[in-house]
Image 1 (cartoon, rainbow, N blue to C red):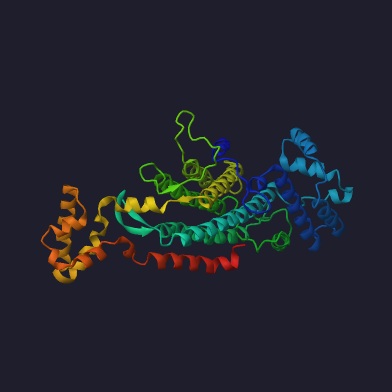
Image 2 (tube, rainbow, N blue to C red):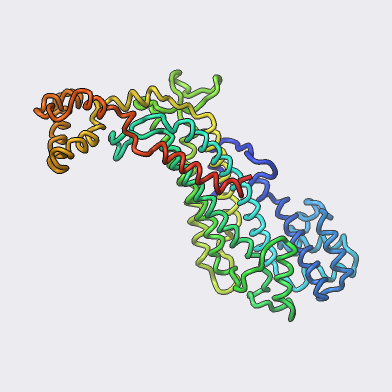
Length: 456
C-alpha cells in the first residue's frame, strides 16, 4: 500500500523531542545505521582477532562519519544494481587498501539489513512510547477533571445508566497503559534480534568464533544477547510489531468513533476545537465537521491492512528468501501510527466537554434510566423478581403515555411503598453513580504507579 493516504491524516508535528518516526525510516538514517552496524561488526572482529585490529579501528572510525555522498552512492548503485555492494564500493574507496579488505568481512547483506530494521523499529518504538506517554498525561487530566461530570451511559445505542465522562475517558487511559506494557515486551524481544548468522543462518563464512562474534556485535550496538535461532525466515518478531500497531490503531479508532458520535448535532456532548479561521464546509457555513476524530477512524482501518501484509510475510520460502519486501510496509505502518497518535493527542488536548448538554441528554428519558434503582429499592419489600416485573410495567407505561417515571410510579398503585422524599432521592441520577468516581481515581493511581518509573 502506498503512503499517499497518509496525507489525509494532516501533517504531523512530532510531539516528542528528538527524531520523528518518519526520519527514522529515511534513506539517510538507514545508510547511517548500516555504517554503524558495519562499524560494530569490524570492532567485534578486531576484539576477537578475526581481522587485524588496525583495520578494525579504521573501519569503526570511518563508520562513525558519512565518508561518501548520497550522489556517489546512487551513481554506484545504478552500475552494480545492489545496495550493499554499492555502499561497500564507495565506502571502500575512502579507506586504506588494508582496511578495505576487511569491511563486511564474512557477513551477508541480509544480516546487515535485518539488524538495520531492528534498530529502526526500536527507535520508532521509543518515539511511539513517548507519544503514548503524552496521551497518558492528557487522559489523566481529562479523567480527573471530569470524574464527577455526570452523563448517560449508553448500551446498544440506548440510554442505560448514569456514568461520568471521567469514567468514560479512564477506559482509554487503562487501554493506553496496557499498550505501553505490550510495547515494552515487544521491544525486549527486538533487543534480542540483532542477527549475524550468515547466508543460510548457520554462521558459515563467519568463522569458528561466529557465535561469540554475534554476541559481541550485538553488545557493541547496545543490544542484548541475540536469539540463538535464525529468525529471518520466520518473521514473527516483525509481525508482532505490526500487529501491535494494528491493535493500537483500533484503540484510537474506537475513541475517534465515540467522539465523532458524541459531537453529532443530536447529541452535542463534546466538540472538537477548531480555530476561528477553519472552514467546515464549502457550501454550508454552519458546519463544524469532526475532522480529527474522522482521521482516527480512517487510520484504524488502514493501519491493520498494512499489518496484514507484514503478517503474510511470515509465510516465507526456505531459509533466507524475502519475497514480500516488507521493510517499506513497516516504515509506512510506523509513520501512520505516529501520525494517528499525534492526531489523538491534538484532539484530546483541546477537547471541548459540555456538561450541561450531558445533563440535558441524561434527562431526556424522563428518569427512566433510574428504573434499576427503583427496582432494588422495592426488592427489599416485594422481592427482586416481583419488583422487577412491576417496574418494567411502569417503565413501559411511562413510554407509552409519554410521561416521566415519577408520575408513572405514582399512578401505579405502588406509591405507598415509598415516601415522596424517598422517591425523589431514588430518582436523582447524581447520587447513583456506583463507584465510578473511585474507579477513575484507581485507574489514575494504577497508571501513575507505572508511569513514575518509565514514562519520561
